[in-house]
Image (cartoon, rainbow, N blue to C red; front, side, top):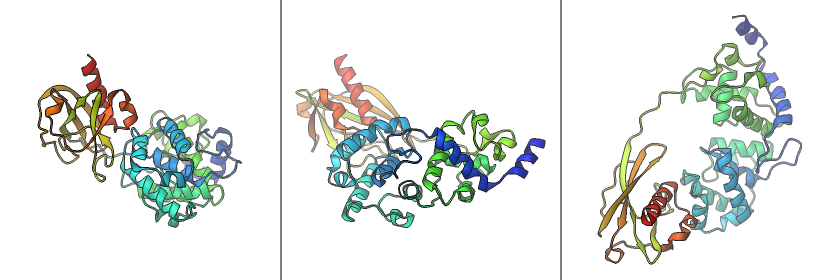
Length: 354
């Protein structure tokens, strides 16, 4: 009780930013898209690109994709001029493919504005695909604007710092308000990145390293004795299980790939033909032909799980398959298939060779 009372007495929101920024000046992570404290302000294109890629994805996973994108399309104008299929193929494996479509739409909107990003949250929010978080992050990190930036790491730090125990998602309004109380007018971009780094390396979801935290003397969650319980998350709902089929049609060392409709699940991506499965229901369409049943691919999407039965064509010439392109099997990785279809392709090749 003594520790809790002392923490409540010494808690000072205005002391948070100086303590955190001092820690960040020494411990900032080196990331491909980041300028370190004291260096020139970061390029808006790279900030925006990295933030879009990092949504629902880890830093380790994003690194190679960011390097590939910036090497192939070094400016927003280059990306705007890219072929849709090339960008979707380069994005394959990052998931959430609507983000790739929004990425292209945003790049083209910025290119139409002379390749200059708006420098305010309001202006950034007007661009295609930029929500509250991304607009705030780009405004703060690229342009030094004071903006309240709250991602999952910041959410965890703030919930613990203020001991906000209202369960998510309802508690997010209180967390955002509290984050606004400690966000400084100066160095807002460094502060946002410092909060992200603190959540990623010190104030982790499990076993937070409170003894190393620059905010430990301010933290109400630590004073209460169980910071790892925060933020409180609502119980997860069981995901529905969907079932479908993927068809492997090979002829003369090439496999048939189709391009999915521009909107909807995995829109605009190359894929194996399938039976129309979706987030809303099982597949039903039957592709005419003679088939041998292969293995089953299991994949988890955000809102449902999928079991995809692989069907291998016995007589390719007798299959009615519609439009598509014949892709060399040995180059299938270069096709940029979404993860679920890449799994199916690997399984088909293994069964074909085995």
